[in-house]
Amino acid sequence: MRSFYAAMRRLLHAVLLGLLGAGIVHIAVLLLVPEFSERDAWSRLSMASDLYRMTRLDAEAGGAPVVKSVDPLFYATACRFDLGEGMVRIKAPGHVPFWSVSVYDRSGHNIYSFNDHTATGGVLDAVVLTPAQMIDVRKDLPEDLQGAIFVEAPIEEGIFVIRAFVPDDSWKPIVSRFFEQSSCELQDF
Amino acid sequence: MLKNAFLTLLSLAIAIVGGGGSVWYALKFQGGVGAIRIGQWTAFPDIGTPSADPYSKARVAREGVLALGRAEGLSFVAERDTGGAELKRECTYTIEGGFPTARFWTLYAADQSLGVVETGKPRLAALQSYGVVRQPDNSVVISAGHHPMPGNWLLTDGFGRMYFVLTFYDTPIASSTGLSDVSLPRIVKVGCDA
Image (cartoon, rainbow over all chains, first blue to last red):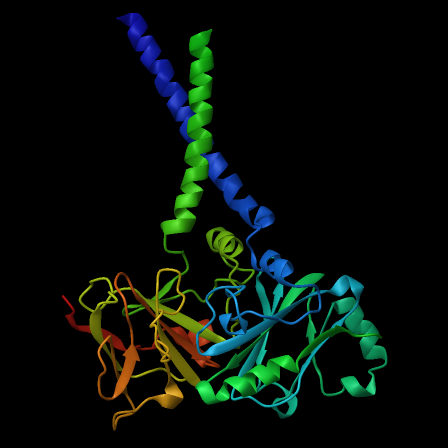
């Protein structure tokens, strides 16, 4: 009988130790998921296209949507950039009922956003750069960057997303053209 | 000796399976923390920002979400009607009331993954504020269901659970201070197809 109790106590001890371990594993796994995820937005986009290439996120362009949960009344496009190579300039001529822009870091966190009310004349012209590059640009601002919106982001790799409102079917070609004419390129300086 | 090895293995098994499983369960089935509830509607203003909690961050990484920024808009999701019952795709609902200040809003019927409901017709299961008929007091009454209805009709189709996603664009309520005195429309069940 005594040996039975001893065995039960050791079993209980092992189970409690296991539960304590489960708590530690829970926290460790939770914090490691963002580091090792291969399904985050960056990974999905890198499978779909190259750096500095505008990629449609909505299903309209054919195939399954690259990044899910985009409003069905919106079109969206994204490009990945690497500020380690230099600053990136995003332009989209033309007018649509509403556009908005977000800059995400490598792990998909929204670090800056603005919409067409912020831009000069409602035209999308933005430059994403690091604070160090901003200091260089400030010294001698090129003429053609005068009207641009500068987004200072303390990151290297990131994602730039443009969303545009499609109120009804008649706007689809106009918004599609707005995205086709958009560009995302390394800006020499 | 064999007993010791068995107990060690048992501890390790509980730790690894329990720890891993609980993370998977929390990410898959639990609603997030940091939610703001207004009536039947829930929003996560912090999701996708660097200040989000670890669970939201893990969910963002796992599902590849690119959340709307503060200057873009704020999404609310409803999964129950005012009676407390889960929303069903085979049922008809009336969504009525005033909407908070925003440049415009969109409303769509969504499935489990929050993608828009497939209707099998050219008409999308979505409405937007520039295309709705308003009451004299500027409130809006929307009928959501499979059968055509007068006024504002949100087409839904199919069977199973449904969610309504209401997104306000370019809105002052996206800044957290404005969220306290916002009222959102009510979702009332009208009836269900047998």
